[in-house]
Length: 406
Image 1 (spheres, one colour):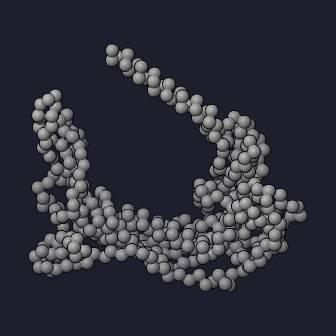
Image 2 (image 1 turned 120 degrees about the vertical axis):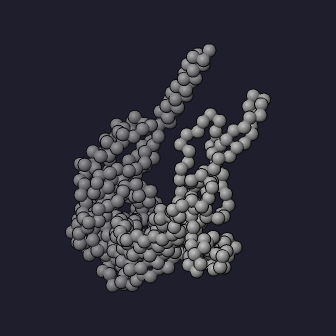
Image 3 (image 1 turned 180 degrees about the vertical axis):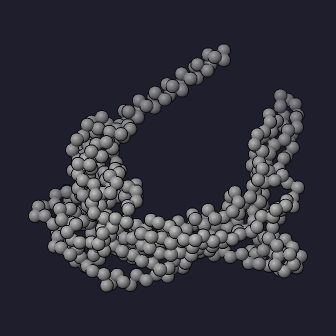
């Protein structure tokens, strides 16, 4: 996924001269003496001190009026509303789905898994015995969905079987707290699969508002009791000065990927990492020869629903980064998403299953980079031995420290 576009932000100005007798908030103490203590407090929103918003009418400083939910000038009575909106406004056109080509363009059969729900095609004359994703033997030969949207493009499988098996052995050998018998495993039933994805391009305009918090420090004097005597000490107290802030930004998303697989665990797919979509080539049925291709289970509308949620969350994080100051609260973001474009692609992933003590495990290998992610059993004996060793080390340190102090 590529994010691009100009950034535009506006918010309240920081006055060049301090209008408060408080210590500068940008200069917290670097070091405290023996009689100083650092604590933290929060003060309620109030005067903006050395941050001001001059009134356009009279030039006096405006202040945030929580009752009016607006900026208010005490001098001339003017008020200025601060944009505070929440929600999503979407302008999209996905009507082209009806004109898209259908099917894979080649006669195939489909192995439908009754366990994970995946429907993976194969064009050989053999019979599919186990699911390529979960290893379940509960698979049925079915007809391919001739009405499914045909992929526009795909990334050809780029990692060969020998590399996959070597990477799998290296992956298992590098795992911690795994049974020794597992690390001696040499055989993996890896299958190369073209996995369905939706990609989305869109533009986004975001308006945001928030309360920007600026830290400042004050010195407080207090009394405490030490060895039965009352003594006076000082401490530095951090406070927060809240002021309203708002702004806007424009971003563009290119090839935002959403998995449409029905059988692959979503967390493993996410852990594989991104794909280089610049390697996409126009779809041809020939690329599927000798390999499996999964039919999408998540349709276009469902894919965009997930894609839109990703965009909204990404914009919220980006807008949060635009808020000035040291901390923030009450962030509100309004997005206008438009110029949505989509395509259906197939991306290469190797899926491998292995059985350990009767339980199946799934491992995935990235079809472009060779990265391996998966699940493996734990050796509780190794874990308990490690815990015992740590506890023994802590006890030894305690004994040495006690001996040194006596």
